[in-house]
Image (tube, rainbow, N blue to C red; front, top):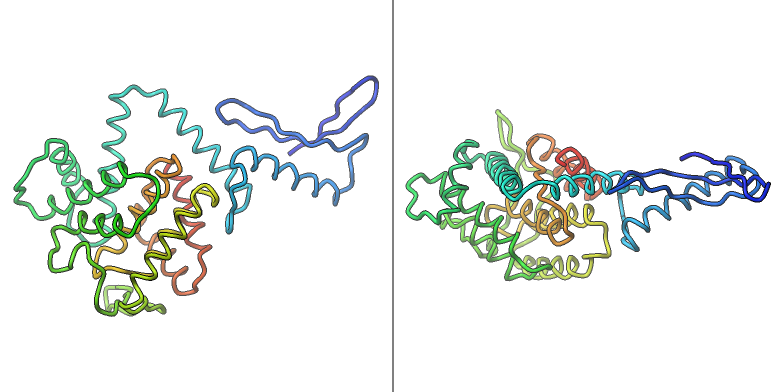
Length: 310
């Protein structure tokens, strides 16, 4: 921010200004008066200017954990990314969509210990386009299920339902019939932090099976009432984290959590974001938020991935 003097009818007037490059440069300003105020008043004027910029970019959308400065910066990056995509031809956009999908599927599955290569994910993507059936390789079938799940998310209507969540799980876990795809777990879940020496339970235990349906229904209702009211980055991050904490399925909870995160991004007109490329940082952020029951660390992590990914 900077102060600027303007001469109007022979009189000096001062303004506090901030220039932001969006689709094109735009200058926001707050009138200060005939003199530059002291530090305290100037600080208050700076807060009003941030309010003005945030309101222009996001309307009345709330934010819980991230600062206006962080969200304004993320919006600048998102709009520049959007402009780049508009300049690409269809072939280039299709190529980028393929690369993004393959990378998302590869990192999502490899993070879960599925022995898949990026080439496997790429081959599964091509199978998905041709509707190939009877694939013999199990890992390719698992990758194809994830691709179909991502496609299901992209093509869905705005908002969530319990049925959508169950169907999404059924799609992405189709290869694991023993894990009851499309059905909530009936046993107590435990979350372990694995190392080379041992697997140790973290300082959080998901809710009992009989609580799951009520909790998922509540989360779905919460999400549907926050679309357009809570900043999209925070909405996506919190949806992922709260769903993960419910841990409603016997297996595949992190996979579906990352798909739901992108469902929230898609519902707000945002692009696909791959948050688990750095596996250790991803797990550290989840565990820190889950154990401390503090959503902020994971929300901050998602913002950092969003900025880095775009």
